[in-house]
Length: 181
Image 1 (cartoon, rainbow, N blue to C red):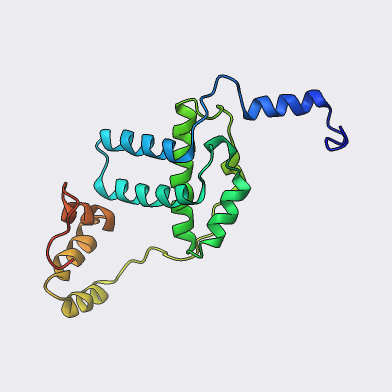
Image 2: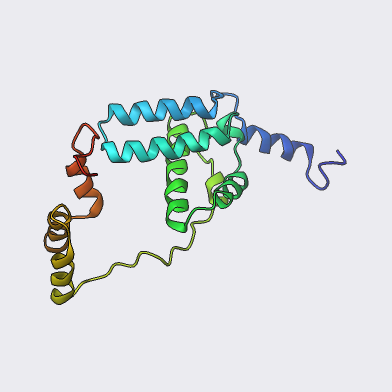
């Protein structure tokens, strides 16, 4: 009772049961990761997305070996900050982890109101602003581009196709890059 301070025993039990409901299946982080990756593969999502998701979640799974319900948002925030990655990469990893937690909620491994990722702020990303090249700047780029770069630059500039979409086309369904990657 001393450790609870001003919190009643009833409030402490309610809090515990909210975080550890009796009807939820306790699952280890790695089990949920494997189950989610298999579900995403079965959904035939893009090779690029699956590879990135697998990389992010396996990295997360190397750090967290226990039950998914025991992973706190503050721990995730600290871990992401310690990775020493840029804000965009940090946000992408946070997004992958959020997808994992959402998957766990959908499978009833976590309570519906699980909100630990609320403690993990989105990093401010001041980099990577979208630039629009003038026709003269584009002409200069194309003039110095290698023959292998020219189609990529031309399609990117004149068709408005995103970089990730071009890579998906280049990688194809097999996930294997063409010669010269």
